[in-house]
Every structure is written in C-alpha cells, then in structure tokens.
Image (cartoon, rainbow, N blue to C red):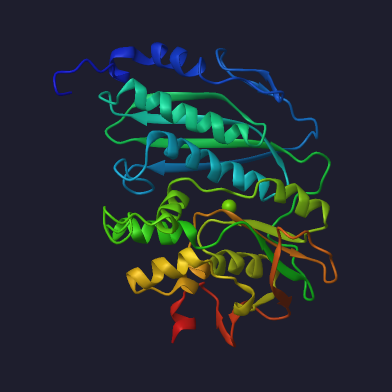
Length: 328
Ligand SMILES: [Mg+2]
C-alpha cells in the first residue's frame, strides 16, 4: 500500500492471525475453556442454553468507508447480544466466523477484535472462539450464547389482550444516521458546520447501544412477550402480534421525538416519526407486560394489546409493518 510496509492478514497466515487475535481477547467468568483447543467450553448454570446467529456481509450490512473496523465489531456483537437479551437471558459467549481479503491490514483485524471484545465486556460475555478464511469481501458470522439464570424465556408468543406495550432504548436514531450518510450530510450543513446532534445520529448507526440490562429486568417484571427492534418497531411488533394471535394499538403521542431527529428530518425533508416507527438497528427492546404493572422509568409505555390482529396507529392498521398505510 503506497510503498509503506503494512502487515496484512495474508502475511500472517491462519495460525498467526488466530494467535494475534486470541491475545486481544480476555476470557471472563463464564468461560471454562477459552480459545486454543478444538472447541471452547462455556458455563451454562441454568442448564438451558439460548443461542442465536447472524451473518453480515460487506456492502449489504456495512460499508468499510462508513464504519471503522472497531465500530463494525461493536455492531456485529451488539446485534447478537441483543437477541440473547431479548429472550430474557444473560449473554455468556460469542464465536465469530470471519471471511477476509488477504490484503486486509492486520491492524484492521485488531480493531475489529477490540470492538467485539469491548461490546461483549458490557454484558460480561467473552469471545471464546472463531474461524477465519480468505474471501473477496469482508463476511462476519457471529453466534452468541446465553444463560437464562432460572428465568422463563420471554418469547414473541405470550402477549395477551389487556397487556401494555413498552419500549426501552432508542428508536429511529440509527435510521436517521444512515439517511444522513446516504445523503452525504453526516457532518451537518457542511464540513465547516458540524452539528453534534447529527453526528450523534451517525454514531448511532455505526454503533448501536442496546439497553442490555432491560432484558433480564423485563423477564423478572413478568414480561409476556419481548423482542429487540432490529427491522423497525411496526414490523417487529407485527411479529409479536402474529405469534401471540393478538392486535397491538400504539399511541403516537407516547413517542417523544428527540430534537436531533427533528433537526435531521428538517435537513433531509423527512418525517422523524417514520424513523421512530420503522427504523431498525437501534436494538431497542419492545415488550408486553400484564396491565397494571409498574415499570421502571427506562421503559416507556407506547400502547396496549387488544383482541384482533396487526399493529394499529391512529385508527390505521398495518399487518406488514409498512409505513405507507399510515402516511396515506
Ligand atoms: Mg432480534
């Protein structure tokens, strides 16, 4: 690269890479045997293991010119850890499968590993193993494990008429950040006028902040159904409605639209409520609770569960989570 000496993953070879990455990954209390053997061993005190996996592909799920390696690692870990948390479980470990071009700088891989490590550290989990292979594009497969700690799993299928619907975490921030990047307005009005409200939204796209402690908390509060919002609130709550055989009525007035979203929407001529209702990738938690439950302030009540089907906002129902039904 430009005549400079950059060590690439091709120079290191598979064993060199594995040794280099393993040295950056401390093993936490859940790990009985870490990387280096044929397989790792992770404690499962509950006796039941929660497991989930996600595959991310360059230019489809992330862009190397929009996100750093560190941010990609954080985000890839976060979306899997969030799925574990959305079952009411505590994440314990992740394994990572990587496809990387041989010309990838070793430092890029270091940063990716550090991103995985730091996101896992937020929930007391560890990167316990993985595999790496040569590939034309960057491909990242993550599998996450979790332990229920004696709690019942919170599925999508338990919502009952009379329950309240509540969310914890951010909605619409990542979608607004992505829209700013796509419009080349990530810095605000221009490079001489960076707007911290807007850069915070772009950061939200690059690095979600799932409300991790709220998953087990919801399970302990008796949540009847839960998921993390990865595809958009309307669509994801539609999954709860379908799986539970109920309807969900949302109150748009319950959604406080933050000033940053209003600013971004004015700049782009967009509707901030559309980002809130249909934007994915913030990995907020959405859950239903028995009516009359007293929720801690991190949870915002946004609606209720009814007999019926689909998700209804202001008298209009969408069974497919599309915004067009509501905007008409
Ligand atoms: Mg999910």
